[in-house]
Length: 194
Image (cartoon, rainbow, N blue to C red; front, side):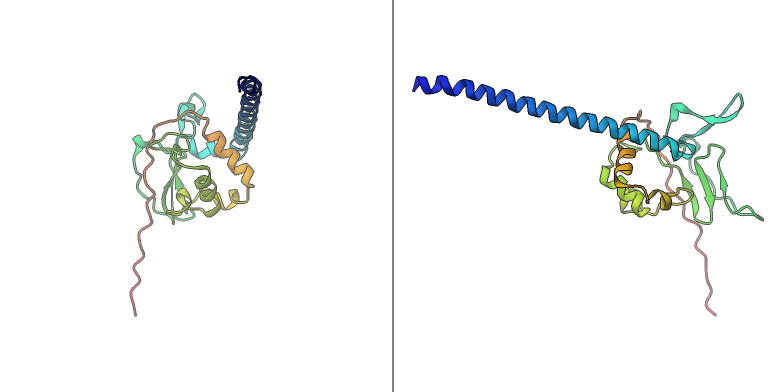
């Protein structure tokens, strides 16, 4: 019996070390894939111009410039909700000076907080929710419509791997606590029966 235990112990030790090695390799490979996905996501976020609307502009020495302390944090909550701008002449829609709020026939829309902040950003969003939101044009993939000028109808044509890469990158940026106002629907038209 003791002889059997002496033989079994080294076999168990080898099996344990092998299992740990395989586990460590899998974790390393997964981390490498995540880093690669996040790097791809950073590239995509840059080339499709997410920051153009989701990073507020501030006045700089040479005019408006992105406020990188608020990178991808959306419409500044300090501004609050903005009144709808009535279209006049050829002007069908208007944008706030921060380039984060827009008024048009759809009502008033605000650039969302894309940072991983748990309370005001995408922190509670899953990868599936993010992909469904872009594919369907619905907030969180199921609720209200995502309004103009967000070009989700174009972005929904991205591959699943590209959308997942964008999500992976957004999970790596600095969380910024910034509660963006809810969208405002346009006034309902009252139609009188004849």
